[in-house]
Image (cartoon, rainbow over all chains, first blue to last red; front, side, top):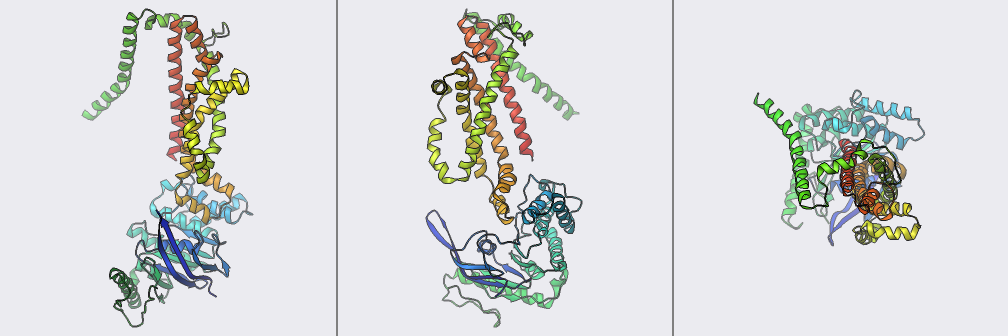
Length: 283
Length: 261
């Protein structure tokens, strides 16, 4: 059994009396230490899926297990990076990180917790901004604090919801690069599921890309492996042959799925981009 | 050059316009006093009241005291009643903010109790406590509690989902979630509630002192009315207004500091 396993999960939301299915029959397995990127358009149900995997919300049907344990709330040793940073504005950077350390390791003394938080902030290059409040930090710096907070507790599994979605292109690139390094220097590789709408970001960071096919209800497409050697860089990926191929696959799958939806029914077969790529039919 | 002159002009206007307004009001007062023989003119009011203002801490009798002493008695009573209201109202506000069923259960009741005048609560307080002092505190607490409850409730409901998610993801305990997430997020709203509550408490004090005859600005006002010394009524009215304004400003400053975070 894989480290993170989702089986046939299903989720609907009810607003104003009408029930709208968001996800149906979604299955996913992520091996220990693997970095999986789920790529899809906005509003396709990606964030819902991530919340379900992380235990922030519970599925209507189906199961999620992490390390063999069924998920019934946020799992031990799990960390989360949100798109909008989600830092507490009344705390400084180091206090935000220390709060996570305190919750994860209450046995440590206050100064030890602080030292750990400081170390985590140093690793993301914020060693000299520890006493600033989020309002005094740029968007990129805030997201660095959020990343430091996630890594400070030595998580075994990391969930990232569009972690760079709110950043400008340049900041986004440096932060992606830094995150790639952060993930590779750890002795114990952290199992990561990232949600993104950027194919480029997915290729840069992940071992496997899973396209999210828009619904409703949304389903997952067939995974596309990314076997490019690490460390990867944005510049290098622009011309790499495999990267180009993966990019074409992902984009073709996603656009085919959108085309399928606009024709209002699975009866019309979508144009298959390559014979190797077979889409799961939305059931 | 022009900008500098404009800045100076604006400052002069900022200072002088309120004074002009005040002057117009005093003029109107004077104009009315020339027609209504019982209403003392501004000058007569000053002549007859200056002993209270110039010797603010002098105690000549039970209600015949310097204005600062009278104000002090009233402020202590307001402080006690307001604190009582805040101590009861704040936790209720948190509970109603967190729990939908609770807020649905008590919302209609609150809407009915909120507009009840302090004058209506006071006799009930007298029945309950038999003495005027606790009855006054009861009236102040009951009347001033509502903005605290409602603003705290709204503040808790306005906490962004992000913050709740942070608490969930970090697996914070209930106590930690309350102390480090819910409380700081609600604090600015709570202080808005406190400011409004204190304003109401100050309104209530005058009524309750008038009805119970306890020493304080309101008690003084009523007693001087009964003694036909009308100038002192005006003194009391001005005092009540100035102190109410000062209280609101103080709370407003505290609130602004919290919002700045």
